[in-house]
Image 1: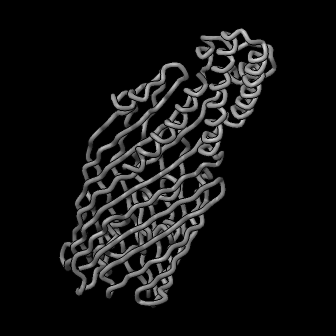
Image 2 (image 1 turned 90 degrees about the vertical axis):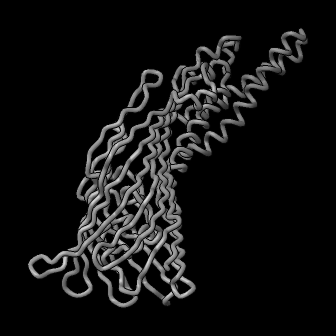
Length: 423
């Protein structure tokens, strides 16, 4: 009976994160992952290359040189997880205890039927010990939560002097898992451990602990275009990405006594919505070696409700995310900084975030680059992270492989990769 509860918690965790992987919050700069930019503190509004500009700021597509042709990103991908309470490890640990508790319960009941006093005493002792371990682990699990983000993107960019354009498809998501341990479950297990209550058939109906998992998966399919204008004698590039946007929301809630893994297949926990949205950006070079940019993602606001499950419903908020960026480039060195001017919103039940990041790149050789940075949440909701990465471009820069990682307190880690081809 207790095993059902924790199988459910573990499955909720996996369902939430699988929903994200097949698809941003902690590191992903808005709705995209780019291993070069993520290694540089998640920046990119002013420092992205023309070939990856469609992911960060479409206006930067005008920075392609005359000798540049077609660029393909296949793919760009990243994931980051914050598990401050080590929920995954705790669930793994408690699963072993649940199995032991179940086995001792079965042994105890078989002992009663055998009418062997020695076996009854042995079985009862084992049940009490397992129940005590379970109660203690439940206390440690109470209030635990974990968050994760992931994303993947494909892009084809075609530069030209008049209207560079790109095709982009990306999927990004976020998951939030929490364990809801009810005190009465702890009291019941502790009473069994203390010998003040004898476990009996039907006791499983008294266990009310549950797990809740919220996940959002958003897919964008768009065409980006950019053009350079002259404003008061100064060049200013403008880019726009109209896109079709589909959203899948998962509201997973599981109780002790009605778990059925087949429920996950019938759409009970999933809702979908399809709509139109748009990204836009501007960029301009000023002074010597300096670039300034502003980008707005998801400029059309949308509120999407989850399914109501076990009396609980949440709302996922898609809101404009406006970010400003500044970059300085001289020879092999690039320095960059981005600051969000608006908040990153997720589900209404979650707190908002607002990021600032700084980073740098040093090109050791024409085909080798080293990068590092730092990204902070100015709202102190998410964990601040240090970032680092490397980029290699063999075969006369025809192939680009970029790798990045992030690390922060609260058991936060991330990994990103990007593979690109220039023709």
